[in-house]
Length: 584
Image (cartoon, rainbow, N blue to C red; front, top):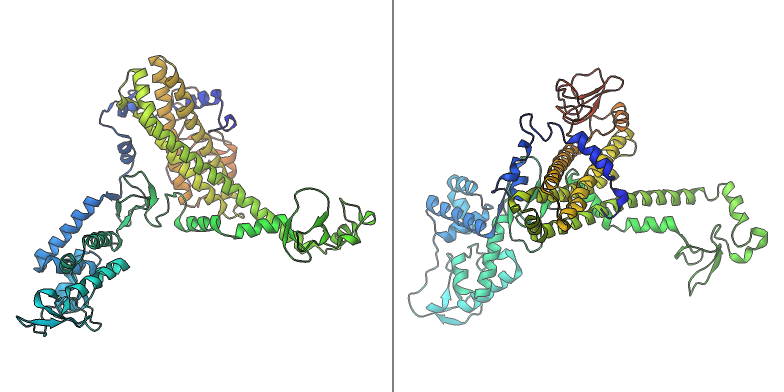
């Protein structure tokens, strides 16, 4: 959004409006304003608007929610199995906080469960009722009130117990499965003894480990990876997309916990992130842009000047950049300082074919990677800028605009929704470059179709971004009429709807791997104009060029017809879309 070259001019935007915003994609046949009824709903919130578009397949759990669920599970085990809270907690930890698994294992073989978990019912060790007992660790004798035991009955002094438990807690979450200090004894050390003998600091640590185990041991829940966020996500396994959004506004993939990356799969994301951080690209750059010194083999880059090269001290070897021969053998007879006859003649004989081939391959590989990475990073930067602009709009500009236009902020939520859509589209567009990098070069039809879709997505997003950023500034800085602002409202809401539809269809197409694309479809797609996904000029359009009779798809007898649902260009002989199977 920093350059005017990246945007369509005003005429293009107006033309786009006329083509796309007069049809049933945004308006009903009965009432032109029906498509924007949400603008007058005082209870609407930007988050609710986004959530309502699709049924959420996950639940965000705050820390209090997690504690409550944990307590409920412990209470259920206590009531059903008639065991203490301490025992119930140990049982649930052993079976990954799955109440059903605890019930199943307990009623199948209670003795086996007790043995595995360390829940001993009775002990053969008889403690005296008075006097002193020796500690099994420090071997000092202590009164009975200074001695503590677990269910096994092995006596240790409270001081040794405290040191033993504290050391285990400081070592990490392994303290949740703490056993009796006697190596051959498997009796579990429960929460009650830990609360009785440890310091407040150790108790807090232990409770923290216990709380985290409730999330980390459950295969349906994961912590939000955002820095400083204490919320967790419970995901409905097998329910579709892995993209989730926490209350902290951070969106991530529940499967791999990287940032949300639709339409790219987790394996591609892993490869892309590894490639961005790997040393292989450094080696490619060295191979493509430098040559080794013939003497010390240190890589040298030539960025200007003649062919006379001198290696850095202590080597100081002088050589010819082209043929790598000693410079003392060069001069006017070999072509002077800016040419090398020896290199040219040896090159004609094929002496440098292999090295030149390797350099050229490395250079091409580096240029291709740089092309995709720069655009990936640029869209990431644009997304961060859009997030900052969204925050500024929510905290400052919305109130200012409400005052200028004499409208409540609840009726200006369409602006926030537009910015939320921009942020989401920037994320999708960013990952399409990782998708394009790993798209096989030999699949020319898919690559051609993909590049077309990507180009249309960029153009549509720039239109929306320009409208939400530059055109909105005119109403922030100047007093526009009510009619002009209402027209702006209609335009921005329409652009938001069209852009959202296009990107949703783009994501679905890429997630399907463009599987149904053939050479004919790709070439037809490239030759078509203004064929944005999720929109159709002829479906009940009211502007110029509209079709009569409520046609459901655009038809061109010379080339084929465009599907109204996904805009795929189909041969005219077929009656159902080859991409989405929608009837003509």
